[in-house]
Image 1 (tube, rainbow, N blue to C red):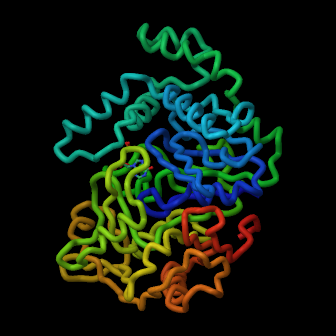
Image 2 (image 1 turned 120 degrees about the horizontal axis):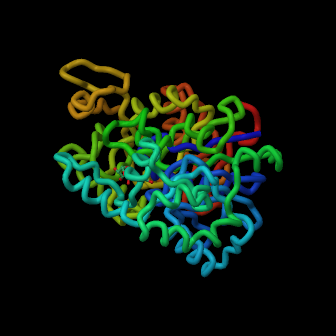
Length: 409
Ligand code: IMP
C-alpha cells in the first residue's frame, strides 16, 4: 500500500505534521520533491523539530527514510540538519538514505539564485537556496547527481572548488546512497509513504507559473521522485489549511485586504504562526480558495483531503471562503491559466456561521461544533472530495481521523 501526501495549496499546509502522524504505520518514507527550500514543522509535546531536507518521518524512532530522486540535495544543509536533530535526541544513523539519482546543490548556486531573482523585473521571491539553479542544471544535463561524486569523469567536469567541496562529503554520503527503485523492490515495504514538499500551486507545471518552485510537487511527481510507477500509488492525500497562505510573490486571488477584511490577516498570521520556517518571512494570508482547491483535486486525483489549522478560526463568529472568481464582470469556478486573469480575479466570498469556540481538544469528529462540520461538509461538496483527516492543533495528538488512511481509495 503506497500513499502520497501532497500540498494542495501554495505549500506550508501542515504536511510535515500529517506525514509524521501517518509515519507511525509506514515501513518506509520517501520524500519525493523539493530541497532545503521547504520547511516542515513537527511538534511533539514541548519538542519542536524544524526540517527542510530530511523527510518528516525521521522523527519516528526506527523509521527508515529516503531523500528521493525528485529532490535537490544541499550537502552542507543536510549535515547541518542531521546535526540539529541529533542534538534534539533523534538517532538518525543507519536510517536516512538518499537516492543516488538526486541532484546536488553546489555552493555557488545559492548566490546565483539570489542574483537572478534580484535582476528579474518581477522577482519570484525565491528562498535563495539554489533550488532553481540546480533544477536548471539538471534540465540542461549539466547537473551533478549524488552518484556522480564517485565517477571521476563527472567530477573532472567541475571546477576545483566544487570538486573539493563534493569530495569532502564523499565518504559520509556513500553509506547513505541507495538506488531507490531497487531499495523498494528488495525491501518490499507494505506501507510506503510518499512525502511531498511545497504544493500543487507551486508545481512547475500545474502551478501559477512563473511564480512557482522548480520541481514537481504535484502527485505525479511522487512516482518519478520516488522511482516507482504512477499505478503503484494507491492513495493521494491532499493537505490544505482552513484558509490560504503564500510566501513570495505571485497571484493570490483570496489574499486578505485591510479595507474589506479588517484585522483578519493579523489574526490568522499570529494564531496560525504564519511565518516561513526556512526564511522567517511573514506569509501572505487569505481566505480558503475553493476554486484553487477544486483545481488541485482534479489535477492530482486527490482521493482524500486533509484539513489543517481549522482551530485558527476558533474565535470567529463568521467564516468566509471563496466559491468563484469574478474576472472582468463574469464569474468562473475554473482556475485560470494566465497571470492577467489570476491578477484580476476578485474572490466571490460565501459566508458561513463561525463556531466561535475552542476545538483544539476535540478528538472525535462528531464532537466538533455543528458550524465547523457545516464548513467541512460544504468543502467536501464543492470539491467532490472527502475530508478524511482534520487537524485541530500542531501536536500529533490533535488529529481527528475520519477514515483509516492505509486502505484502498
Ligand atoms: P524556490 O523554491 O526557492 O525557487 O522559490 C520559488 C517560490 O516557491 C517562492 O515563492 C518561494 O517562497 C516558494 N516556496 C518554495 N518552497 C516553499 C515551501 O516549502 N513553502 C512555501 N513556499 C515555498
